[in-house]
Length: 377
Image 1 (cartoon, rainbow, N blue to C red):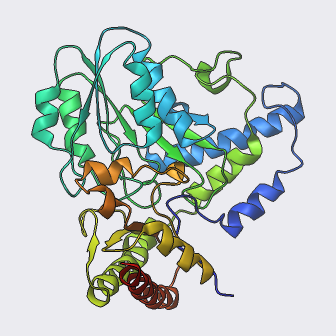
Image 2 (cartoon, rainbow, N blue to C red):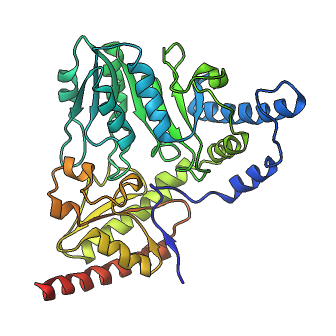
Image 3 (cartoon, rainbow, N blue to C red):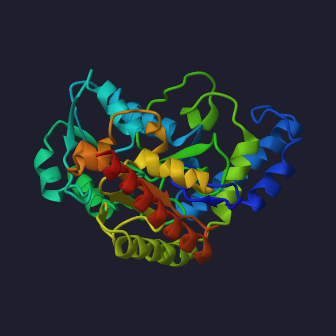
């Protein structure tokens, strides 16, 4: 049976080179905090990976703090800054990842939080952001690229605004790493993760700009420059470092983007009453979030799954819930239209043959479901 994986925004397949590299370190079991040779062997693995990641981002090694996942990185950034003081002001957007939104909801116990509206393509209004800033604003958190609809925010402009107003700027770049070049000049904190870039699950990082005062969420030992206590996992960190080392941004920006546009064009041209969510140009290279009138996304997903095509109806963190995606709701879709959307996300292992197969299968599936819909009517 054919297997076509189009859920790369949820997680990517581990690159064979990453697997091979991780296997080299499977038997290196020393505690990285131990001073003996076995411990220092593990420590060397961690620092080598930290160096690879910091070099890729053009930052200092000590500015990279390893965490367990993107959600932890986001929580460490927001709570680590905000819980240092009370009765201040935070700004974020309504389409952030749930780990940011729920962290901000928690922080409403201590601060005032503003959630920026977005337009029908998912972009925040820069003027609205400026107007929301006040003397109590201490932190702005805006996702670089949205995990559901792929919208790319102008983080360079937002970063400049933050710097001009002496406000810390956090960017959730979990979906962006490896796909886009990121300028960190005006970014104070940035979340990244390994399993979105063909690395292992269970390992991520938070970039914390030098001299940024932040408190840990986990207290204990002095690991990760006193910002994340607990014994590090050299095995996973090695995989993260290798995944970053072999990143091919040019491929993502050219080959993957071209396949994305080819799939979008085929769907919109061949399937009636379909629409693309967000901008076609200012979106992640591999993201296709698309809707179809008179069908449910869940039904499309099931039918494609039977045909060996694996995709999603929203972000992986929201699977199993009945309520519609908060992102699709924020861009103005009603419940019926929001439930008619699916997300297909491409990666380095996809090719044109797979996209042709998917486009054809999708067309047949939509036609079949619509016939069933109208016959039931």
